[in-house]
Image (cartoon, rainbow, N blue to C red; front, side, top):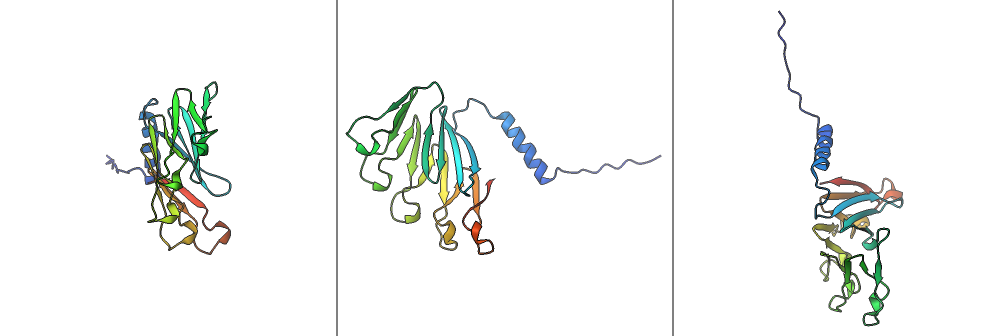
Length: 188
């Protein structure tokens, strides 16, 4: 009679992570109130993210916010001369209003989007780190962090993380043509 030996083999880390991500996507509620975050690397080596806020696609590339309305949606524009720096900008998409920073207290964020519907947008202000002054700090619950050290000057002021996603860059002189370009976007 043969004795059957069973060995316990745990999933390898990579398939285990894929299974966990698959289960996570299977359990996410399609109508949740949190922002949906999609990230990609552009052809010129920059990180770009797209958030879906209240049914509106918001693309953030290089710290600039672009709002894209859906089809068959009414779009309103600011036509008043009261704040000339935001005249001609989108004021509403459907029932969702878009508001802007109009105070002169922080000139680096003057005229930038401050909220889309109920989702607030904040920016870094002050002179402590001048390389991130005026850059995005948060969009709703999604936070932005930047590289501020002087060790690698080619990535100083670039996005370090967006929410739970970490962005790494090529550094060093081995491939100078890749220096400072996005290497990977990974879940942190």
